[in-house]
Image 1 (tube, rainbow, N blue to C red):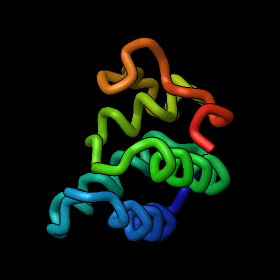
Image 2 (image 1 turned 135 degrees about the vertical axis):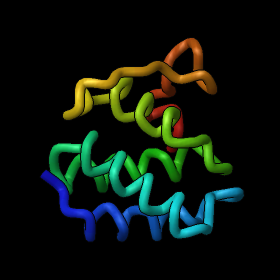
Image 3 (image 1 turned 60 degrees about the vertical axis):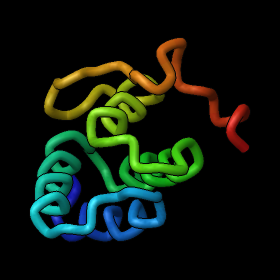
Image 4 (image 1 turned 30 degrees about the horizontal axis):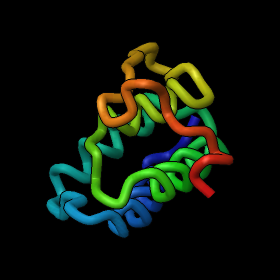
Length: 97
């Protein structure tokens, strides 16, 4: 289980993306989503790193969930979704280096 503090640190990193929300309510909502979805801090680190490599602009929480689910793990909360940005599948890590 990841801590809210770890999720908040991850959100700080996502602020590198254009159009990432800057208000506290949006950050709090995203913290709740990450804590519910991600199992470990290693998985969280992987997710943030992949998101920063794939998206120049904030794609939204649903796309972050799709990246997590479609690429590596089943979300801890069981909510699954697919990418609307990459409808043919998330590019492999080799394709995004």
